Length: 178
Image (cartoon, rainbow, N blue to C red; front, side):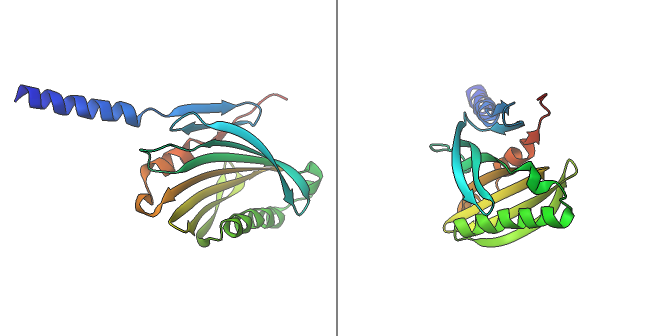
């Protein structure tokens, strides 16, 4: 009996340690912090937009197996400051609408919800897209002329899992002296 109780304790203890194995990722260059369930990789791609070519900075972790989700990523794109000189709420919403519509179109998905929210006072979106075999959870934040996007992709059977919320809630923008 004592061995049985000890075995259960060790199993619960080991499971707790595994569940707490997330890594804090901080980038002063990209001015954000987030927790990933493993070590993410950073990359930069040039993307063509309606206003010209932009750098898309991606920090992404894709678990090999044993995780609730297929991909965790934070994306940052800087738009020209001049584009936002006289920006009002309507203009900011157009920019975020474009980001959401682009995401849905790029994956040929179905938009399940698109909630307008605020993040530290900035206009933001909380989005869920259905794709073949799964879902994409996105939060898009427009901070002056910068768009930050947190994204989690999961399979149908893992929809709504705790790790989605944990990852997205861990995201924050940091102040960095320029």
